[in-house]
Length: 350
Image (cartoon, rainbow, N blue to C red; front, side):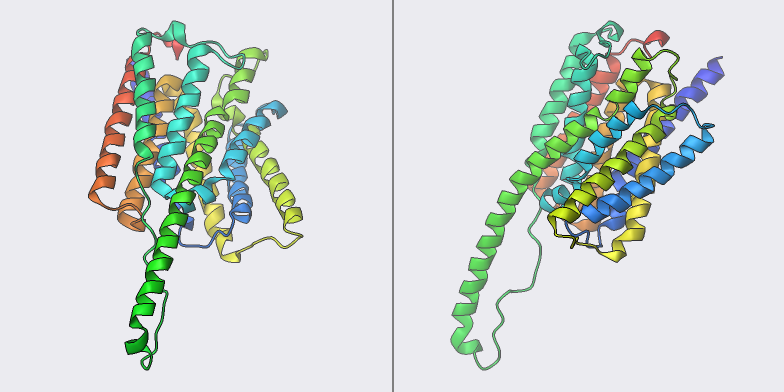
């Protein structure tokens, strides 16, 4: 029994690690492709997600389908519509940091107070104050992450002077270039504020996407307690809502959607990666419990995404940004430690 318990925990932590890695990396496969306004990419991504869910559904022996659980997928899809915009405005790493921390806060509020008809987790907390401290640290990490700035794109001089005009027009060229640079900086700052707000809203959607499935588990007679049995339900909701959003988008664009054929294969692969991460999250929830799985999986991708931003995309640079990132990770780790430590070891609370 001890060996079984050890293997169970090991598999839970392994699934959590895989989930963190894939959540933090799934957008990197499409980073070098033009996703346009993101709507076509969203549709292709969700096709990949649905295929991964179908594989889980078949592997699980086609468990009972709950249409109400599809609403969780619809909630997630609404948040995901904003991701391309967020990444463009504030960068991959900061985007993952902000929406991941926002989702953690939403999940904590729901579990601690028992919102939306779900049971409160307070009876399962040995030290409620430690859990509240974890929330405070998570909020501090969110505030800290807003100071991480995406650098302006590095481009050649926008003003071009030919050889004959170089001497006479040098001052004019410099003046035009400085004016354009100031305009770009101002536009970047406005975009960062909008991108930050969009990331917070997306995080709220991500934090709520498990609620329908969890509600069914707690309120529907003979409903399965295995989270994997709700994966396909949720992924069907994701695909259906994505199709609805895309059709509305086509109507808005007068049937002239922005489509880049090169994004199809990378987008589909990104969807498969996301589906793997989400399915592993379901497993981690079962093996570790929400108190351990949620902090690890929601905070962890920010580290992976920021590392991609620093070392691959190089849209985060400068000592000040590195200090803020370091502060975020210290706060995030401390938050995870407090939340996990506050949980009782009683198996009934798992």
